[in-house]
Amino acid sequence: MKQWTHLLLGAAALGIAAWAGPAAAQATGASGTLRVLVNPGDSSEQSRVATYTAWKGALEQALRKQVPGGMSIVLSNDATADLGSTRSGIHDVFIAPAHVVGSAMRYGYQPVVGLDKPIQAVLVAPKTSPITTMAQAAGKRLGLPLQDSVVTYLVRGELNAANTTIKRHFASVYDTRYQDALLPCLQLRRCDLVAVEKAVFDRWVAAGEPVKAITQSRPVPGLSVAIKDGARPGAAALMAALSESAEFAQLLRGENTKAVARASDDFKYVATLGYFTPRALPGADVVDAKTVAQLLQGGATYIDTRTDAEFKAGHVPGSRLVPYHEKSAKDPDFDAALDKFELAKLGPDRNAELIFACNGAECWKSFKATQAAMKAGYKNVNWFRGGFPEWRSSGLKFDAAAAAQ
Image (cartoon, rainbow, N blue to C red):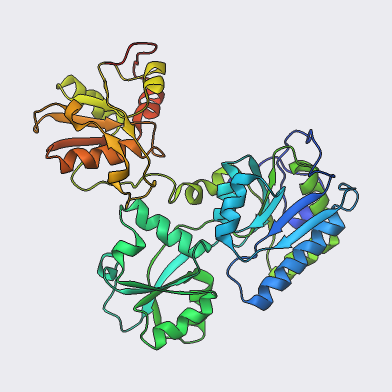
């Protein structure tokens, strides 16, 4: 998944590669100040401060010439607020866990570099526990780090992708700020299982704790740096400055790791968790473009749930426009009462073969419309999760600038 390209001369000693993007074209901040946020992740308070101090020192030393207006570097322990600030563009640079950087990418930031310490979320239970799968964990008591920590984000995202939620799957949730505080929760039998980083689980095992891993997420990048498009000194200059920084080299030695270039593809998995629709929908067949084409040849009806403007710009030939007016949350537990969808336009035949689609995996309208149809008694329901973008990219013919049917 990782692609290390555009090697930066002089960075080999630190194992760094650079994104060779264009030079920044505008000043940073109102007075040229570089605004930096550092969120060290789910460490202890002492470790958090030490990590922040190390990054602050490395940036100040590396960029003292490139940023004449100086730097405003702040420490954050609130990933929920950080996720919101990626949308507002308040900060020029984020040094943060993967899910914050993945969110920032959607709002005009580029990943630059990160520590070569991938993170995985692991569900952990006592060794004597009969729980061996996520399905068997249903109805149990779960211990989690604080909301929107990278571990909690990964667990919630994987459950959403499976078309369930933490609230729905578990009987109760115990929250704590630091991951090591979850071990007593297991020991005291207050939690049936807990979620922590794999590195924390491995440390528990090495210390002789009687615990076992139930399941784990895919790995995501460790603490990484992202810079806003147009911010000075720019991605390439930031990489060059860090590669020459003795403070940054010391930071890497202190973390017992190396620096690696970060590209957008590295964050694709974490950036889509909880943002894209679930991968499955019980009661409906999830179909691809090829299957949709076959179903249409057999007489199925393609229900396009997008807007009239989107439909006119391009749609599957013969499709029927039935817009899904969405006000509910983009979440498996959405409140359908907040939305509007004209079920009567689907036709009276509850046995008709129907295909619901919108604008790809990140579009929730067809997901919600499919459920509405099933609740209304339609029995042959297909969900085209990839929607019109997949149809078009598959090379299949489509109509454009036509009146809605």
